[in-house]
Image 1 (cartoon, rainbow, N blue to C red):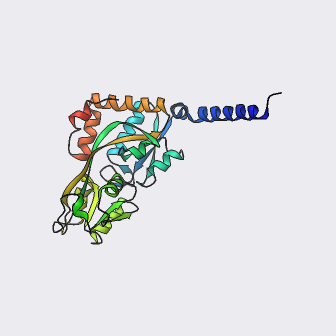
Image 2 (cartoon, rainbow, N blue to C red):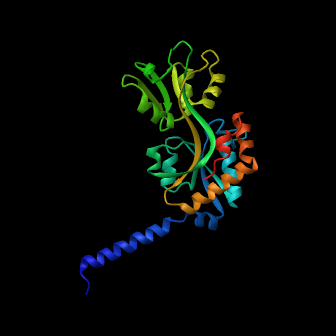
Length: 265
């Protein structure tokens, strides 16, 4: 008879292997269902918003549909917010997240990323009268951000301790705070700030400084190598065909950066 420790060890090993197999091939599950669930933004124009017909529209929505098409499956759009988009992946409410997701070391510990599909610069904007040219100038000032965004993480790391980072649950709440004068500075994506100018004509946000030049990637759970390869193949094909450049120009009014357009993964 085998010692009880040996039996338990074998049982634990079998359970671990079975669990790994159960979650190791999301692509197979997607292909079997014929549907890929993709988390997309709904309050972050021009990347994702709701139009007058209550339909989702934007750059990320178009990219989600394009990737699903190239994967040969239907797409189910799952609205997410900045604060919960990674949680939606980890709890398997979404297979992919296409929601202005940028890479950083902390995020790469918990999820994987595709190659870049769109540019996204993160900057500090504010009313013209507030003089800010870099992180040091945020000392004693308050800057609004959407909770859990790249800007939130970057400013937390770079702003002086005397700066106050006011976190809002989503971009709409942050925009409302700026329009109503609750904050004079915001950390956000360039295109969000330009859209904000239309809502605050008397206090149009002026670019103070670029926090980080960044890009958007598709997020997915770790270990899904087959799914990652499929997504990267779809993005590469869209870059080579010019389809991705057409989407970026449509929503951002700029072409896909040359280096990004010719870098494949």
